[in-house]
Length: 203
Image (tube, rainbow, N blue to C red; front, side):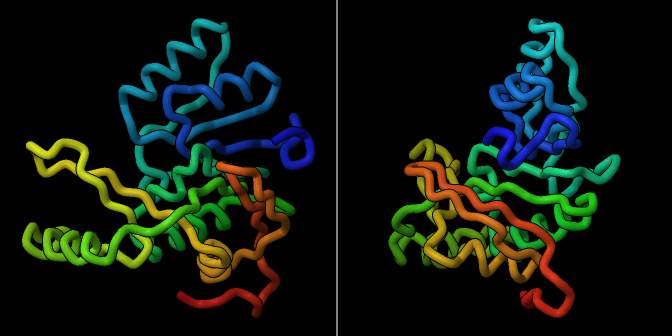
């Protein structure tokens, strides 16, 4: 990402730090980083990697949507396309709105995301039926990709690849606007910033 988007004198929040690849690299390079990660095993691995390199960083365990954030940040990064793993547009919008509420003045949000063909409509219908039968509060939406992980068990992988303009629409609903777009092959991302009053959309 480089100094073009993040500088070493800024407070950074990394959402989806996983086993620590990006977190360790950023901290080792002198960036001030806190992280959020829901997977305990991944968090344990990240902490071991930090310790191994003589580094330290605050890792908050839990889903970004649920955890309390300790302060405001200059840069909030949704890393590793984790934004595409948040089910339902309304939940993604809420996550972006929460991120926007925890920005310092002139702060910004970096979101990497997936693109690609959506799931077949029949799979979405089946997923909606399964959600209804099981009493789940998840409501599959067009564009969602749901794939079986193990045919012997009711275990599925979820992701949401974005179509052109879709992420910008969710950002607008969260009171944000696109400051810059980087169409990196296989790993596009956008830089978002708070929209002026009266410009944000509704969702």
